[in-house]
Image 1 (cartoon, rainbow, N blue to C red):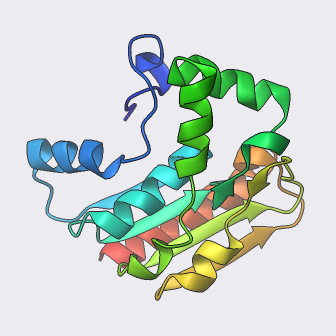
Image 2 (image 1 turned 135 degrees about the vertical axis):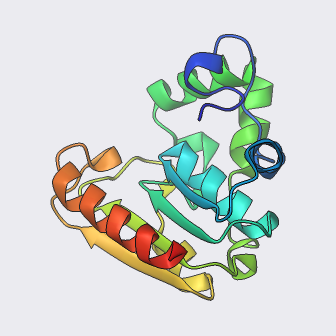
Length: 170
């Protein structure tokens, strides 16, 4: 599912930090029995934010998701992408400042799996270990050889995530 500022909607909408409103509307529309969320990269932040604020989320997985962003040290390509998706540099800076789940992590009451690649080191991005540690039912998995989005470790990552979320939702 692409939401505001993501994927196919990137050209016609801007990113937003309060993604639980988007997830809530999807849940309202689909009316699933159980809700499991999986998010990659910035989608990992959206999953964590939604799991903290949307009580209907029963399980969540973040893959290479940021715990916190620091605008001043983000690499230029990441800043440029955020500027494009936010509509201006000012909006991108404001958005990046909102990408911080430190206060929300203790509110994630559903089971949470956080997966990072050990080779995923993007300046200005704090990866997910603190999220898993602060969430009451968080579990952290680091794949030492994995890069951002675990593109070089998909068989390891996808099987782990699929088995875990299937079990959490059962």
